[in-house]
Length: 401
Ligand SMILES: Cc1cc2nc3c(=O)[nH]c(=O)nc-3n(C[C@H](O)[C@H](O)[C@H](O)COP(=O)(O)OP(=O)(O)OC[C@H]3O[C@@H](n4cnc5c(N)ncnc54)[C@H](O)[C@@H]3O)c2cc1C
Image (cartoon, rainbow, N blue to C red; front, side):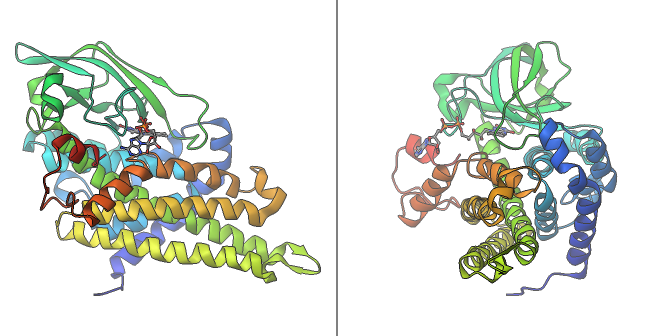
């Protein structure tokens, strides 16, 4: 076991921290207040090539490993969860999914432009009646000659209104259950495709989250990702990468809380001394530090397995669950340490507190992660796929999203 980072990983982390401090942090509070997706920051992120971090160089990426990608994601989320969501969607859910399942032609066409920002992707799995129960897809794909006509509705889709391309999961026949689900790469300029932003979110206010409406959207069969009926497997494999970036991002949020709280606690005085000298405040800071260190080890272990191309659903779920919970504990305690000042957006901890909540909702709620982990521990269903000990298909599938 080697706990050291390579010089390349250290360099990319340093570079990302400097970029995040310089370009993202100063605008994060105002963007959050104005619920503004910041194109200026986004363009700079693309220009640096950050969103192609784990994509091979031959497809226009930086060709770095998952440890580097995790560290980079952590650094972004240390200052802004909304900006990190762009990484989770563009890189993890879309680019890496196309890299794994796409034809050579699809990869050559899409990946270089996804890395430069000429194309922006979104991942359309969730529907009004299909969240945790993702296999219950109602969006239909009807064959029409060599094309498919897609009709239905998606909801809570990050980057849905800004995307040029959407991965849309739809069923060719609801009677087939998860075996009918197919993944389509949909050009969002297609006739019949509309998106509408969701307003009034608790957090992630400068991230675009939208509903998608599809009304007989014509998609050529060449735009199927993988094969007909493989969509559910593709959706779940995408989540293995998405959850990884959420876990790394959550550790970044905890680190953001630590950095804000340690500075404030040594300045703010009560009873004649800095609040950082009071043991109850120290206890909250100690808990955050433990959470950050433990969470970092969990996501880095998942990164290590990803680098070796070993199935890592369990390790990624463990990281996603723990880090999401840790971020919520840290956000909660950070506001507490700031007292009344933590209750206003004058300081960033109020935003961290609100932004933490989604970490145990999206990309599989914390309850769904617990199902995956517990079923694996109980021997009911191996998360990494080597055994399915007699549970009904439906129960087994319910556990994966
Ligand atoms: C800001 C934001 C961005 C998002 N971005 C995307 C995106 O880009 N793409 C996308 O496809 N989706 C996205 N989502 C959707 C997200 O993945 C879903 O909200 C999530 O999977 C939960 O589904 P649901 O909201 O339908 O809740 P439900 O599935 O209705 O769950 C409601 C509650 O019941 C619990 N529950 C459900 N089933 C079980 C069970 N079997 N056992 C125990 N508890 C259970 C859940 O854990 C939850 O607490 C996003 C959501 C948000 C809030």
